[in-house]
Length: 321
Image (cartoon, rainbow, N blue to C red; front, side):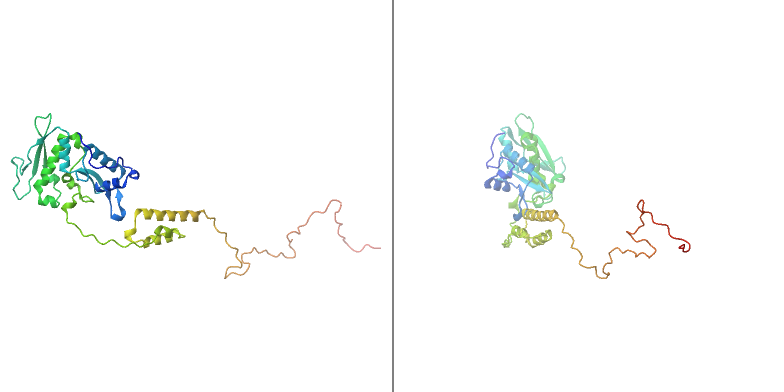
């Protein structure tokens, strides 16, 4: 396949190296989601895969030939039916296709669907160089009908596009493998960001809320506790909240908590008096006063020194002559 991308998409998924123009093109390709004040880029693997598909196919995201859509939390690269036809043409092996046909019973096929009821199936055959017969693919209404406005209004056209995309991918698997059309993926769920904005009525945007003018991070640095940080976050208006501001305030709160944990505990002050309700000295150890016939501490009887034995007490009467 030959061809080059029309627009200058980033060379890699590292957003830190993107220019302002490249960032705008990535957003236009559908790789950014979220409200205006909290735009989020798709995961790095999704961005890398999309850029690789764009280079490989040479399709233009600005012309909506290729784009990225998030459905139920899962990202996927999609192509329009015009983009798939362009990829097949650039291979130089595309030799046209059969007219789209529809049926209600799988036996009788018609080239134009005029019935008011939706068809049951559609089929398309794609001719490729080297093949004698066309490569035919069939899409059934039960498998692809998503029940959306376009499927209700033009069921035959939507089903025919699914059959054609199936046939193109069947004929050129090397170039279209892993790429699906919006019509095929409608049954997977509604995208978070609309891929067909023009098909929806324009909404009148509400006036932007006035900024508060407060420097929330500077105010957070004046707080002395995490409780005050939490109270400050509660004051931030919804239109000024973002993941970055929340992360900054949390960082300030963590720093405060670490400082508090690093400070040594203050010693308890000495009690100048006994607690109220207890007599003074109630916590002191009291000693029992010994009776006269008891030995007081420190007055224990000690043995006499050698040669200084006490005289025996006198007994009997007076023996003076």
